[in-house]
Length: 382
Image (cartoon, rainbow, N blue to C red; front, side, top):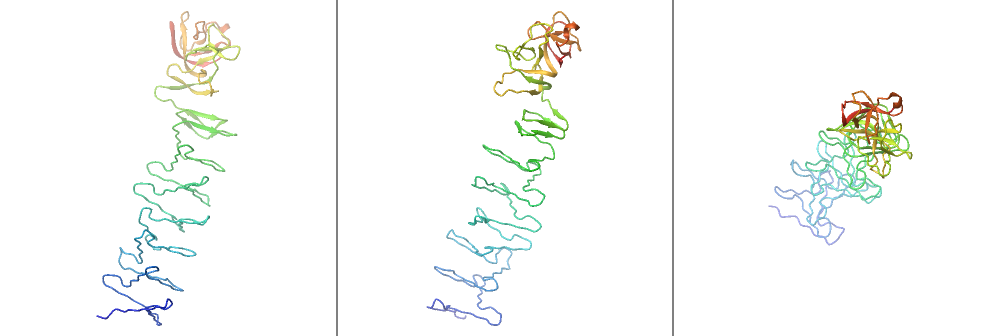
């Protein structure tokens, strides 16, 4: 067994051991069957240092599939491997696998102190620049403390999407906010574009100085919709009933006269001040309509909704509505014209054609042979 090679130098500019090869071979080589081939130890500086003017300063090769060509270990809570360069600090390259792999709480962390610098940057000529994947949580989570900045910001310089979300069985893109707006869209052409149905579980508010809402196709509404502005429809709007409730009439809110408690189904007339009260005389030309909401009919659309006084009656001006009627003197058949009655809030058969002009409420849709009752009618003010 050959004795170990030892070197000693007291001059900081002179190495203790020096190996040189002028024929293009290896200057210093160390080998071991079961441990380190070359080991360097230093108390205050680098254990092993490499330097090259035209190639890699340190070059490591491993032939084992589960080991690294170069590995750095730090048991003092510092970096295992660090790279520093005027261009790329750390670079990883592979033709078929992962260029850089990090293992730990945050796996790979990138920081930048440059105001315009990037912490982590990924690029690809033909595929995805950065891929994030998780088995049980978010694939990517980004956060910012900047007031006017976004947690995730996507830019596309071509005619395509800035940000896209995809899911086979659930939500492609979801936005939530405790106090602000969950999803905000702004565009020069359209703020949002949907290919397919749109469902709103809640109130829909639309406000614009020009057209508040433009629809070029069918619209289905199953909840309250408030539009503060013009509504332009280039197609069909369908208001769908739900359960036992049928949306059947066009109504408008009116201010009730002082002291008036007007029930749904009541026939109402106008007062001198433009308010409404229950009818109390026959063939009254001041008749305004029937208060909507009786039976299982509800207004499909309500105009002039008051924001301060929520007790304003909704008067059906057109469509089907349940109405309080009386057949004390004249039985009512389906199709009969109806007018105001002297019985408070009730309608009766308009038997006198001369008096009926301007006092017709609508037509009965079902008969009432005697007494008083609540029947559906078709409101057609005449």
